[in-house]
Amino acid sequence: MALNKKTFIYLSFLSLVLVLLGFMIFSVILGTADISSKEVIKIISEKLFSINFQIDESKSFIVLNLRMPRIILAILVGASLSLSGCILQAIFKNPMADPYITGTS
Image (tube, rainbow, N blue to C red; front, side):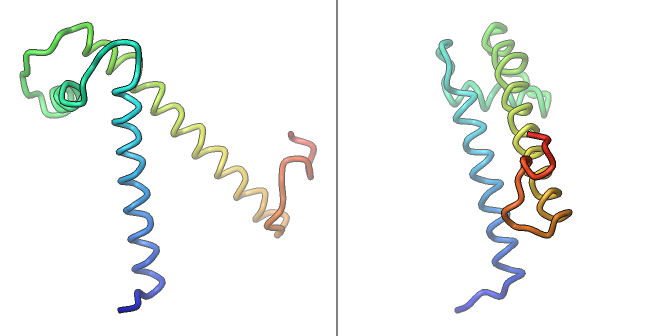
């Protein structure tokens, strides 16, 4: 069964979003403080859905105030860099365009 182009794009986008979410959870787990994946999911669901789990405040502080802002900032920086590259390529109608063309490197 062959997929049409629109369905392929939607499935690709959905799979990339799921991979991004997986890497986000994986990067929240990594660190010098020993926080398990169950605790990370409990901390995030406690914050989002106001469910009261008995979680250590220091672990909650580490996840919500140290690790999550860094991950969100990294995603925003990557998205803005890719958008600026796409804009440069669209302006010059050159798929090989880079910042050295305009001297903004």
